[in-house]
Every structure is written in structure tokens, then in C-alpha cells.
Length: 179
Image (cartoon, rainbow, N blue to C red; front, side, top):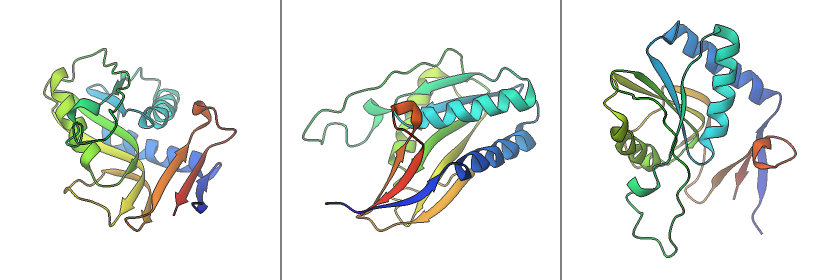
């Protein structure tokens, strides 16, 4: 049976989210040319929380989209069972925009690479920044580094970081290290 160790929950999660939002406000100011895209499946929950706090603090209606990169993954056809896609909803063009791509956990970097490919269907952004709640250090396979990080966690290749959001039906937000 796998061992679970709690690495983050509320209220530290709210404090981290608030800190990350402050960094975004410093770098994007009025968000006039910025959009937020949550990476499916679990990055959308973090993106929704970030966008809610940004809208509350700035009063700006910052566009939010959901991006699914399932069919852009390099292992899409190599799996024993087919991957099930999630909903993509990007009701705006990203041409010339500053895109803030948000995911819950960054591990190998392959999902972010797939997201970059998937984004091209919506235009060519001026720039892309990556925000992650958890950065799993020492697991990167591609040279991808986040611009905004909630927490860095050192993990072995055999370990996983599991994020449980209330929005998914869990009783509380928890982030676990699973051996």
C-alpha cells in the first residue's frame, strides 16, 4: 500500500496563492494585455482560484481559459489504455497577448511542452509565463522552468505529488507526497 505524507493544505495554500497573485500584479499591473489559461485537468482549479483573487484585488476582468493538451502529448499513442481528453475552452485569441499558463504540479515538463503546442491553435502569444503550485525538482526531462512557484519539492522518480481540490469533491484541499 502506498505511503502518503501531507506536504501542504489550508491555510498555507491560501497564503501561497495570495503571494503568487501579488507577484502577478507586480509584473502585469492592469492586466490589459494578459490572459490566464488553466491546464487540464487539475490546473484549472488552481487557475480559477488565482483568477478570482486577481479579479478581487485588481477589479479587472481578466480572461480565463481552459486548455487540454491530451492530443499533443508525446506519449499519446504509446499508452496501453487510451487517454481521455478534457474540455478546452479558450473564448479569446491569444495573438499578441501575455499568457499566464497555470498548472498544479510541474514534474517532467512534458505536459507543459504539449500545452505550448496546443496553444498555437489560438494564436501566437507575445509571451508565455508558467505558474505552478508545486515544482517537483530533480524530475525534469525537458528544460522547462516555472516563472512563478508556490513550493519546490524534492522528489524521487518513484514518488508522486497528488493534489486534492475541494472542487473535485474532496472534503478539503490537500497536497500529498505519495511513495
